[in-house]
Length: 301
Image 1 (cartoon, rainbow, N blue to C red):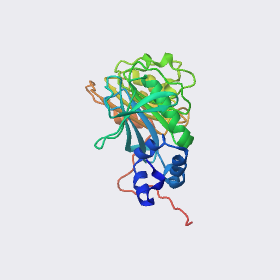
Image 2: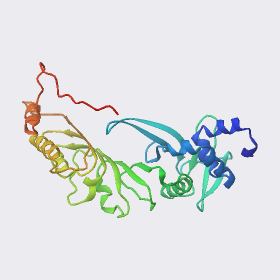
Image 3: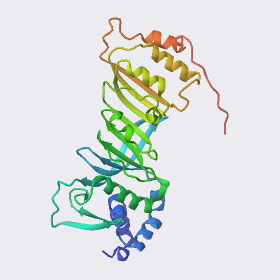
Image 4: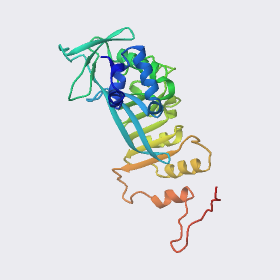
């Protein structure tokens, strides 16, 4: 395809789709330079490049997170490529691309986004090759995330790759975690998850956990990340929540924590959850409805 001979308007229409931009990265050097020159502003405002594997819908997409202060409230995804496993049969309409020394198959469709197949290599090699290809073009200005849904994980030895995991329990893989790889986001659903004492698990930047009973007390005691969203089933010592809030508020612990949420489900306590006691223990005060709250004046710029 002689892209450089197309009218400027046609070129702009092609570049509007990020899928086309990624596919053109396998073209010539002149095409890559043309993309950098014409799409510089857009490329500088990209979100995270996400490789999602281990789920029914394996894909590559660009993620932009909408925040309300520090709380993530919405994610906007722009799909780029689909990923198919070794069970896919390579048909005649698939074409080959040599990516970082590995032979990769692509399928182009008028209905669906392009599909990338790793039938001739394992998934970790595919992620490594695709990451290297994208990193060579986009550079380190954007974040590259690998989201995987699995309990048995082989971590690719790739620099500048953020690992995000959904699994039942961190114990299934945490002991085999390479030292040069850190987990940014962990989402776990093991209700009987044992705490990982003396490990870097609690340093994970974002924890989203569903735990049972007193396990939440170990999480509250050891958490060192930026965000925590905890759902707890069963009874535990509710005063630990007030103790956690008090230490956090006074700056005695959890210095990096920016956002915290705890949700209690399946409570079997006859007296219910002592919300007032928890708030009182943390030193929270209730404003008088008949009085105005504190006011702040901001000087004009």
